[in-house]
Image (cartoon, rainbow, N blue to C red; front, side, top):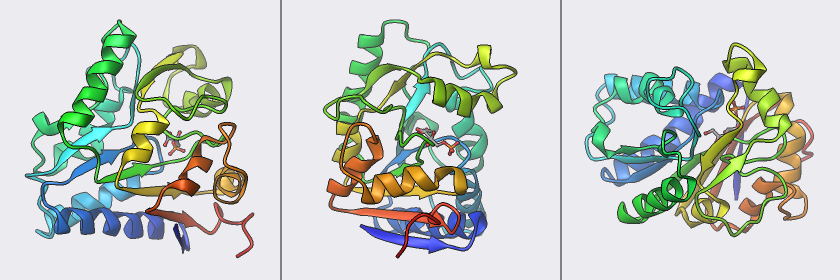
Amino acid sequence: MIIYKTKDYQDLSRRAASIIAAQIIIKPDCVLGLATGSSPVGLYQQLVLQYQNGDLDFSKVTSVNLDEYKGLGPDHDQSYRRFMDTNLFDHVNIDKTHTFVPNGLEEDSSRACEEYNQKIESVGGVDLQLLGIGNNGHIGFNEPGEAFECDTHCVELTQSTIEANKRFFESEADVPRYAYTMGIRNIMQARKILLIASGRAKAQALKDALYGPVTPHVPASILQLHKDVAVVADEEALELIDR
Ligand code: F6R
């Protein structure tokens, strides 16, 4: 595991974007595993800039996103499909038919998850998986206490995640209670992982994930067992780690 400490969020976004850019340059037809939330917004802006400057070509890239709220479709402004379109896909030359997000509108959870697992397999697995980390140590929507052995599955969101995500909705009651998420097994099968974390609110989760015991109570702690992980985190997120 390599840990890059950055001054602030801007710096983090540039550094993390250059890791993704390197992946695209080395393997133009790579499969990127992508994340939503506030952490990657700056990184996506950097990728758009690199594309606009003519330094990046997304035309052969495939993407699979980590997760989607159950019940939200592309038309909902808080769906993760919409997030990806708005923050990245609409601004680069990626072929949108090669971008995949779990189908939030599929009511049959088993079918939605099975189809998504098959999709990940059919694109040949993920070359580089981008991850944020929840204040409670979650990755994707793999919440504390869940088994590590899961593939894509349907989860009931914890109160802490609902609290953290309500800022994106009009009220807490509007936050969906369920989501489809890649499981820890899917994430660990990615050939490389890039974890980003910014701000004090992430400091405890990051410390537990990187230096605590590997336990389902801190889902991100499993990353200690992956052979190729880069962590890009700012000073505040790393403030509890004495290096
Ligand atoms: C998003 C995702 C989540 C977030 C995490 C951090 O696709 O899977 O695990 O990465 O909740 O969210 P932010 O970046 O908003 O702090």
